Amino acid sequence: MSVLDTGTRIEADRAPAAAAAAEETPLRRLAADFFESRVAAAAFALLCVIIALALLAPAIVPQNPYNLAEVDVLDSRLPPGSRAMAGYTYWLGTDGAGRDLVSAMLYGLRISLAVGVVSCLIATVIGAAVGLVAAYAGGRVESLLMRLVDLQLSFPAILIALMLIAILGKGVDKIIIALVTVQWAYYARTVRGTALAEMNKEYVEAARCLGFGHARILFRQILPNVLPPLIVVATVQAAHAVALEATLSFLGVGLPRTEPSLGLLIANGFEYMLSGKYWISFFPGVVLLATIMAINLVGDQLRDVLNPRLRR
Amino acid sequence: MAAYILRRLVQTAVLVAVMSVIVFFGIHVVGDPVWLLVNPQMDQRDIEAAIRALGLDRPIWEQYLYFIAGALEGDLGRSFIFGEPALRVILERMPATLELAFAALAMAIVLGLPLGLYAGLRPDSWASRTIMAGSILGFSLPTFWVGLMLIMVFAVMLGWLPSTGRGATATWLGITSSLFTLDGLRHVLLPAFNLALLKMSLVIRLTRAGAREALQQDYIKFARAKGLAERRVVGVHLLKNILIPVVTVVGLEFGNLVAFSVVTETIFAWPGMGKLLIDAIQSLDRPVIVAHLIVIVMMFVLINFVVDVVYTVLDPRVRIGARAA
Image (cartoon, rainbow over all chains, first blue to last red; front, side, top):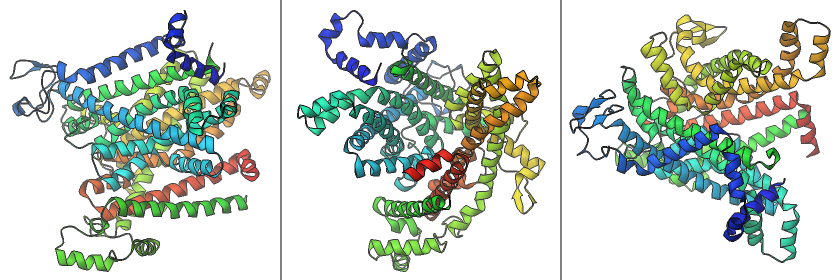
């Protein structure tokens, strides 16, 4: 089966009447393929739980860790299971400022995921646009854009991010700029490669014969057909973005202290680790790890499911 | 071959020029170069004098030429913190970084090759599955988190190894390194392992894939048919053939190791270039930041150049492709 076929299936998703009428809808087949692997299903469930926890954090945690009125400094660095003055239990202990670690972690998770997802979306849009334009325009435009992509991919991501942060300074917007800059090239390369293959197909020729405009051919005809690989790259890159943001924040050059992501929580716990107070760094690290692993496993399975060559 | 190297050299020179423009204009467009080059703790009159002395009142293209002229002479400003030329501060720390990256690379190969070979020879055994699962972990675990856990287990809980610093160094054959003393080796073990983990996963996967592919080949079957001992088949016939791609790819990754040493150096307080950059960003030591960016760009351009040339020497297909293009 061809990439074209995957594309037509996605088109079919948009026609609700046809999809509902069919006994086996494309989406259902995709889901069935996806959940065939128990590991992938578990990872997907874990990812759902993580996202739900992040979204619902303010409603489910015992304290708002950044409301000074709710945090008691006398409770700082308590081991897991200690009782709070306010009556509830610190299941995972407290950090150096007396914050309940469960609450701080879920708030941190919110920030980490938000930064990762936002940067990933922006990078997808930019990268896909560049890739499509490069494939469609060809010639000088293509070689210029692709040279830029090659140049950027020859430097390690963390290095580019550090260079940008060094020039731009700290802040949420700066981090997002850095993450987008690091990522867009991957999307551009993937989209260009797929789009080049699509360009030779008959439906593009047909669209040209019908006199469709360039923009319409690019975004309404070709774009839907390059979506499957784009989605796979986006998943993998989302995990990278979360990990990179955590790394930068850990190094103290990422998010500011007012926006404490998981990386910053881990960094805060580092100074206490040498005196044996492991939990301040350990538990946020476990959450970070679970998030990255879950996204990666879901991405792996998506790649197998969406790759028409591997279809059984 | 000479023509190819020459062409790559010209491309590299163009790249360096482009990067210098990007770094220079990036700093000038995004930030105020006055605050980048002049210590903000000076008083107003000194600042104005410094602006004139540094030529910051000139048009921007003239400033760029001035900056290039300085850079060509190796003058990239003085560190606010150390009061020494920024370039010297950076170069002083380069051996420590290279030493760490080298130790990590060696460790990745020494540990990764046998593990990958085992997993390739016995793909269905539980030990192989464990190795492969471990290599997936190696890919997805964030480096800094692994570093923290290593410190927690081996330095804090068990107390076996030191967790900070470089330890004693010794000079041998004109190279001063902590790899030549026992104390230094004890210090390098944890950070090198931390840095090596990612590459080790890569080596394991490459070796396993190479071994599984080679086992199907006729020369292995023939060697077995000849009645050679399994040890000789694996150790000589198999290993020789899978070693080429492994060594090449791992060599290509050396630059990546240097880049990631930023993280490892910060965690283990390793006195290298990466830690210097983080410290400089934290303390707003701007001349060091600028000089560091330029050194990093130069280093990577150089590494990429060497890698391309080596790759061409090893793989003739690249050369033919380049000629056809």
